[in-house]
Image 1: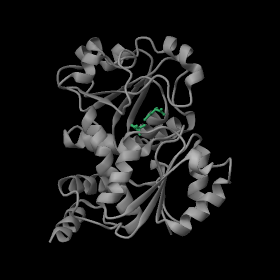
Image 2: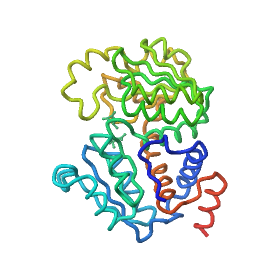
Image 3: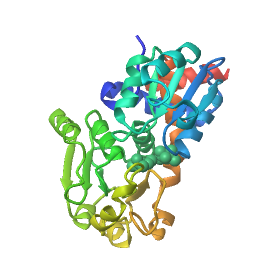
Length: 318
Ligand code: CP
Ligand code: NVA
């Protein structure tokens, strides 16, 4: 049976650790393994994207395959044609569907109707590929551990929801500092807490939260599709910023993370972006490596355990 990555909740801890390990191996040897040779991926984007679009297209090429870019203007997902019909037709031509959708129900519907694997490239609810890239970035710095306090300052949005789904599987100390009324999805939060895997806090004072943080993370105050709420959000999020005071509260070893795009002067200052503590561009790069691991796993069943992944790449290189 085919497997999708619509949500991290359908992955086990072992699978996630395996994907991170494979991604690390692929980063060292980007062209060594080509499980998508003669295969094609459809890339559907209902919303704007830089990193996700380019890293999936480049990743498919590095794995030996070809991608077809389909914007909402091209295909009219759920407007010109039903989600189900589009999923079935694309499954007849392609080996994989990657989609960024406005509504989470659209990506879920694609997953249900397609006979090939479907990968969530961001929905209004979740952004799983981003969190895998962030986890790889933390792992590279030796801080992917429940001993590290990860403090997300900002909106309880799609990125936070995926952090919570990740925390349901991998032990973390995750603290969200958000304004009241901007908490994450209640069901996802409850499920992550109920799993008992991670220490999860939701608080409303960003500077207090930043004390002792090993990672300070943020995202835009106004996500794509929330433009009408811009004025209210800009007011509500005042002070929910990675800035000198937050970094000072966290300490000199704290990493600064942001999924990008950034709005300097809102959720993060120019100085924080440019700080030597910033690993923001590593996160952007790691989108490529983790997504290659995910595609290899879903399409070709590539090994996801650590040594197996290393062996796979070593044998491909010989
Ligand atoms: N972080 C991220 O998903 O970037 P894009 O919106 O540019 O793809
Ligand atoms: N929360 C942001 C993430 C962008 C990568 C958005 O949905 O617009």
